[in-house]
Length: 335
Image 1: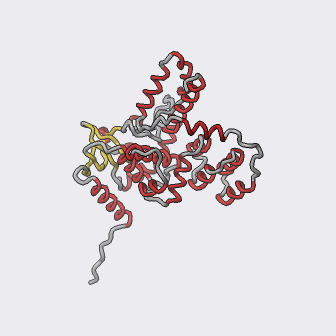
Image 2: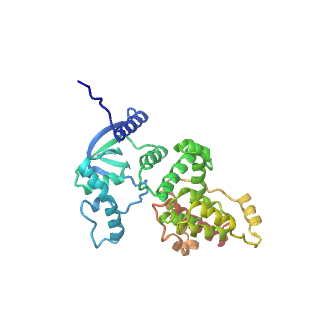
Image 3: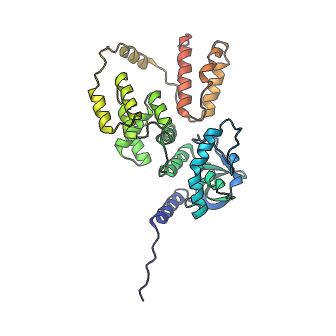
């Protein structure tokens, strides 16, 4: 009689390896539990990409909800995962940390919401005894999310911006290098360079990425490196219209450069040599308090329109509003 060999599936093996890796990292502070979905809350310090929440489920969002259309889009995007959970259960536990009698979500928002849609009352979770450091928190979210097939470039950029900000604060440095980012998240130097390039790009490129009109990192980095504003605009338009990487390179190299001399460069260099660095912070509430304090001054109350449309969950939106506010203050003679 031939004995059958017992073999684990590659998916189950990968899941076990990830669990062992996390358990090793958090030895003594992590355990696996089945917890009630009713005890899970979102961590207010973690930015969200979804508008739908646990309070909207398990039924469809209410039609009189101001965000009904976007919430319904989120709901429909979660249905496939919810059906998978109904059939096969949850293959990869979420990660939470204890906060009194509740559990705050570190990673696994979609799995949590999909479980609620699937009619589940509880969920398997890796439980941390306390809240991880900001850097460890953002790293956990990165490793949890990076394998997702539906992860957008914008979601990666938001997560990476958190990692970089937390790392720079933790290390006491002004700017992370591509090599440091490579070592931090385990990617190639070229990919890390591309990430840094796009994160430092102008708002128009980031807006296209946020709207999911530009999904490819290499294309986005190619556009970000273009200096000439006219060529950059054409390249971005090409990206949005589906140009390949090769076509973009041809477009960029064949478009005539502007003949207009750059008269702003010496002035810009002069300002950089004497500018004051206002530092960095990972706390959204700190920035909001600072902006609120500025706008309480009679002289600057008229600048309140600058921040009225700020998305306080989006680091890029907050940074843009703050920079605009500083620029307007300089016009008032603050500098």
